[in-house]
Image (cartoon, rainbow, N blue to C red):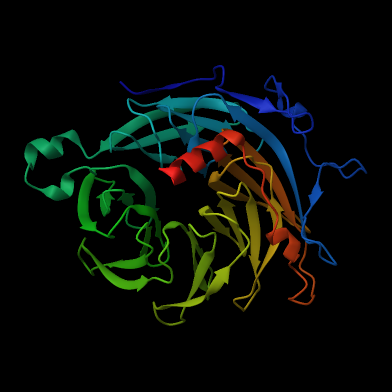
Length: 422
């Protein structure tokens, strides 16, 4: 039986960023917030620009004693995290106070997606679980499991319909198309499956790549599906008109190294697709106006090792890397030019996953950034982007920063060397 737990002692402890010591979980009043005094905790971007445009501050750091966090999702003022265990935890934005947790029969929650009051999670048993949750300002939190995909009855009633079968390997990624109520899942079994949530049926299943499917996105504007893989390719798929099948429309491949993550940035008249690779580069493509063709626009360099996660929001792109850092990039209006505004370097291991939410203010644009690393920490950052100022596009990058040597935890370095040696 699967159920939720209310508030209980957390598997996390807050870490004091100043002393690097484990301290008891504080109340919201003990969490450092912005301070405009000379002792302000806000940090300028390490990139030396004539007129810095970004400030950031780590407002909370939580250490997990058991396993790693693999996935993060945001909805309705809550942060959901999936990890090695069979518990999906819910935290309050922005202070990270635990609201409760969901307990499943299987762990290793590699992918999470939240939309409105629905939460989708993937598990070690190669199933997808659909949850419905409610939360209020009075700290009450309720959640119940709606269903599991595939439905148990699908095997009994339609034993020969392979489209209803579950994935045969780890489900690594998940996406949801709001307009049609379609849930897409990508797996290390090289397939992508489309599930209709209204009746819990798998309506399509196809082999998408020659290797693991690592990330999947859906454009909410037109239902276009984007996938990337360890085979080094990024592919674009479209649903066949009036059918549930999907057809390949474009293959974007510019490097032989694995592609781990995708992000889509779209507005009224522009659409950019970003992909993060094992060589540390971020490729991007711009969609042609009046058609669905994507043209390669260039790549962003700065990370020393693999880019494991990407988030695009407004004109910003947040990238988390194996080099233990998070970079914040901004695209210039009306062009393909990107600048690196900041490097957030609080983690001591690979940054495995990211989630970002927008905080609008009168003068500056604020963001809450949630990051989880294989150093077993979960951090919450507040980022402020000041109004853009006209300056030379060649002044933004301090080349010495790109050559910096990140400090990785000894345990991660030992594991990495062992894998490389084997």
